[in-house]
Image (cartoon, rainbow, N blue to C red):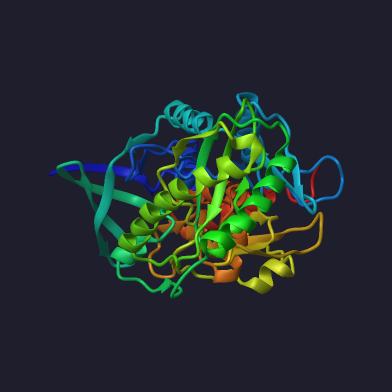
Length: 417
């Protein structure tokens, strides 16, 4: 069996995982990412979320402030510099989003990881977690036809479903079912240059077709991914009514069912929507847009009250700016807002395991209630929790960890610019 000794192992190469890897590498640590798919970016690229939410403060002014670290600002500015969309868009009630092209983001992440000397194991999956005292001391990874032994000093779980905590037999934060999932598909040959007009046409057509064909009510909310309509192509998002669970086989079946639904629905749209009469489906993205699953339990669990009261903490290591956003089985979305130009802080203990001294979390796997994660799961916040977890995981003593958390809290661009 091949064996590696590394300083920091990161599980999952989504936005949080890549941010954590870069942060740890900048502390001169040997970093390894374990990714079960063949590409980087997680849901941001493989299900093509299409918009970065939570990167800016909600505001009714013309120019939103970036939330988080100087790292967040640099990351977004670099991405903007190679993207078509150069400015954030006021999406709804003062919420600003930044559109991106999935392939551009994926290439950008590859370049950033390579530039920081980070090793990536793709098509690899953790199958065993060994512990010694209060630490994880060994991971067994299935990589192709081989098993690989990883001996880490620290582990950051950015998997989105707490796979390390699960394999270690730890208590999880779980629900019987989760927010409804959406599927993104790309359409070419669109004869419209107005996102508003296209969405109105889709709404009118789907309202009639859902009733006529007895399709799920959630299909009524088929819409264009904001900012994706350009060059006669657009990305469409459709929400499925079926419950998302922690069972991979159930969710995989839903993805296949979703593909069939899209292929069934779209020909009707080409007949009913004038601007789609020559349109064709170019691609259905390979991953279902699953918003949340079970999560790891930390030393602190972020709550709905923390979010809505904009609670500030001395150990805060990320700034949350997005409202509590929950997608229902009928396609409706519930939004619970806090005040504009304000935010809550995610404390460091949401990123630190209650059981192991060297296990940390980031992204959609932070320790949070169902309501709280419905806010903290967005890309802009994942960017911050990943960066913070990467920094904290490089500390070798509890005293160093406390000092690092204090520095991160100070570094946050909270209330600045």
